Picture 1 (cartoon, rainbow, N blue to C red):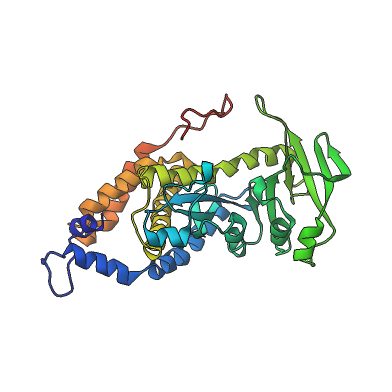
Picture 2 (tube, rainbow, N blue to C red):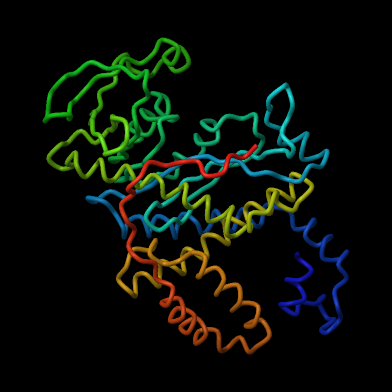
Length: 365
């Protein structure tokens, strides 16, 4: 609760040091603040931190990104229900809570967020994602799930130029014509752009060249990857296959926010759309701060940033700031060095190769 934060940091009204701030005053101040300053701060810092990270942890000279969407439950107030909308359930029912849809762009190897878009559930994921592509830098590759396999999105990324590449998985219904065989299971192919897509965007070409790489992992169905990385010598097929599975890092990032930062709470706290926006920008900013500190520590230890436990980092940082606020600010640099040394005790072991297919352990009704 915000009242606890204000008390822990010993905050007071201007000119009234030591005077306890009334809870109603805190709520009113938060409402006056709104979401714009928090959004400004996130958008000012996120691209700087995330792009620098993606460039340091590049794959074959390409900065690595991922984009995907998720939903978040928000409190069931009339304002939130009217603004964000609800998901239709079985028997013509609606979801118990209003849902906000969110799409983010992430530097996959450090989990630092580059940008985010969110709003009402009725707006589709692709529309939110369209606002993210402008943040993709030159010499980059973006990993996407097959829901983004459409000419408008992927050709749009290609046509920005500057070696902006994409990698995704083919759909069951995807079809193409083979142009050239590179190696077994590795081909240059040509996909026909649908009439519907060209009617909406006449600048789209009739034919769309790309690379198709087929593979199969033990215990899983055969898969085909499609990509704009057509140079087989510069971008070997085996490495592209391994690279695609890093797409799951963005799902792990969402898990860190929902399960760890939000502590599996049913909803966010705010009962108004403006308050929800303020809270979500705050969550994104706080997540980046923890991930930035983890990356700095990982660099000192010469380890991948994902080897630093997010749970341990968040817990230690929260504990530190609760105590630091009561002491002399001049000691903060020394405390930060001590904090990084303590975080070094929370290095995760190397990830193991998954031996079994995914399985549902608990079915959520």
